[in-house]
Image (tube, rainbow, N blue to C red; front, side, top):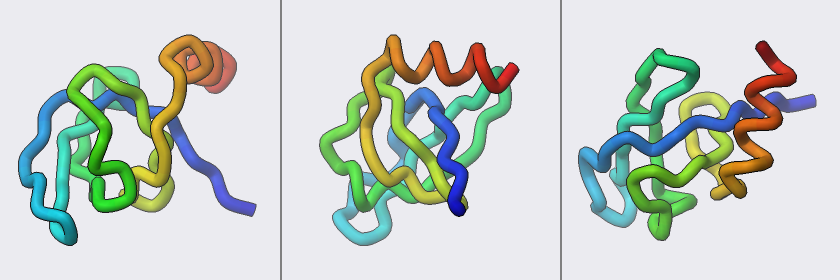
Length: 71
């Protein structure tokens, strides 16, 4: 079983198709994550991150609900 955590895209660092990276915030902690699977994500969007890779965008209401449950 895999665990994906919602995080908020704070800023893009690299928009290269293969090397895409963005700074993602998880409850006040920021990490650099790979974004090649979600090049359409914009700053302020929530994405699901698994093992340092953003795998999909997620609705902000759903992301916030999930974060509340995890807290």
